[in-house]
Image 1 (spheres, rainbow, N blue to C red):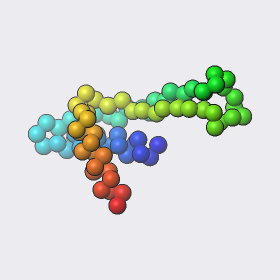
Image 2: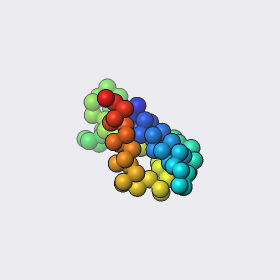
Image 3: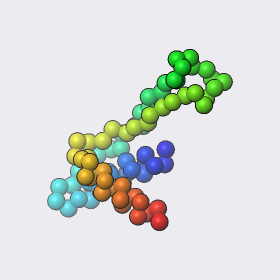
Image 4: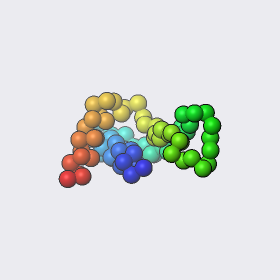
Length: 78
């Protein structure tokens, strides 16, 4: 969760602080898709649960913008 929120907020502030064409927007809510591989949901078998989490981003987030943000986050980790 820390990684996805870190990415979302880094994207937000990189666009907000863009000198040429700034964009301020709210970070959207976390969304999740859940499923089980064998088709039977069992609370006693959490290892069987699969999920994808995501946060919607504005159209201005291109693959290049995302790659730049990822490089920025990796520099912070060091």
